[in-house]
Length: 243
Image 1 (cartoon, rainbow, N blue to C red):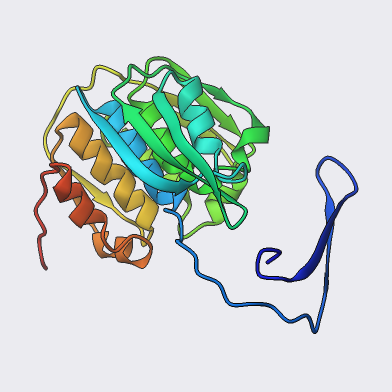
Image 2 (image 1 turned 180 degrees about the horizontal axis):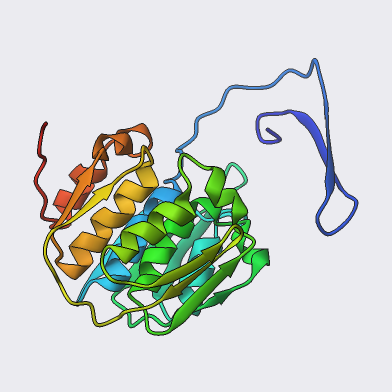
C-alpha cells in the first residue's frame, strides 16, 4: 500500500500490538508486481524433499516474510537442510529462493510463539515429525480444529492407519516418530474435504513408498490446482481413479 502511494502509518504500541491508520482520498498510482510463490504451498515440497533419499530441490521466489516463515524455522530446528538464497524486497515483501536437501530429521518440542507464523503449515510439519526420530509435541494449536476440517483429528487418524502413534488434547498434539517405516497393505484415507489433509498423505505415500488411496482428493484444486502436475515433474508416482 505504501509503495503505490497510500497515506498509511503504523505505530507500534507494544511488542504484540500496532495501530494502523490510513488517510482516505489519496491518489495512488498504477504498478506492476511479480506475485511471489505461496510459502504454505512450498511447505509440502520442502517436507517431501527433506524426507526423500538423495534428493534436492530449489523453489524459486517464495514469500519469506517473518509472518510466514515459521515452518522453515521449525524444520531447521529438526535438522532440516534448508538454505535461503537470493533474498530481496519486492514491493516491501521479503522474497527468496529456498534450497532443500534430504535430511535425517529429529523430533521437536515446538513453542507456542512460533506457531502463529505457520498455523496452516502444521499438518505438513506433522508428516515430517511422523517420520523423524523421537517424540514431537505441539501446544496452543486449538485453531487447527476449526479449519476446513479438524486437522488435529484427521492427521492423527491418518497416521494411526500406518501404525504411527499420536496423542492429542483439544489444544495439543504429540507424535511418536517412526523413522524406520514398514510398508504394509494399501491404506485408505479420507481427505475430509480438506486440501491440506489430502496433500499431506500424498507426500507421505511418496516418501515411504506406501500404497495409499485418498478419497476426495479433488478438494486440492481449491488451493493448489497444479499440485499433481508439479508432483509428476519431480517424479511422483500416482494414479487417478474415477468413481
